[in-house]
Image 1 (cartoon, rainbow, N blue to C red):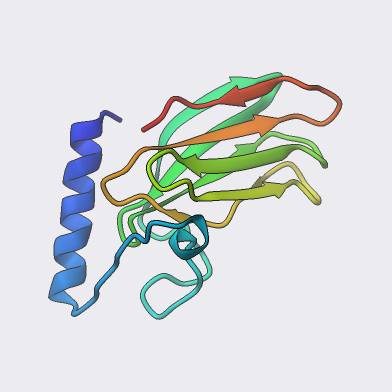
Image 2 (image 1 turned 90 degrees about the vertical axis):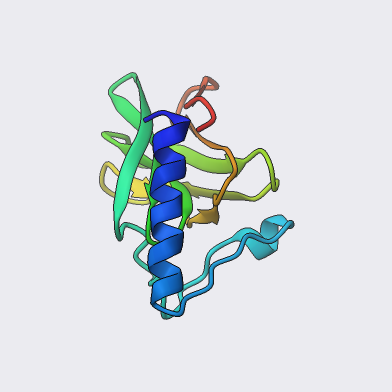
Length: 137
């Protein structure tokens, strides 16, 4: 997905939020930019979500996911192994969230604010030192 489509999606989400009396902002610190469960963005960050970009490596795929409802991003691994490590990082605000697969073959990080900014998602699979990242979107 290119940046102009992402901006249109973000603008649409902002308009929908304004119409519902909802205000979503992005703070300048990593701690403040982390999204916590609220009335507008539940603890399930998958609402109105799309995969912006993904990178496969060794059977696993790292995805940068985006919520048009919350204007947030997070990292998700699909096809991974227990112990695989992932993180999402916002280059504009410095916000970052990390997670690893505890069981099964997939997991995701907590979401971070991404309104009008660029983020990437990275993974390091268990037993390797190779880091695989999506480009910034």
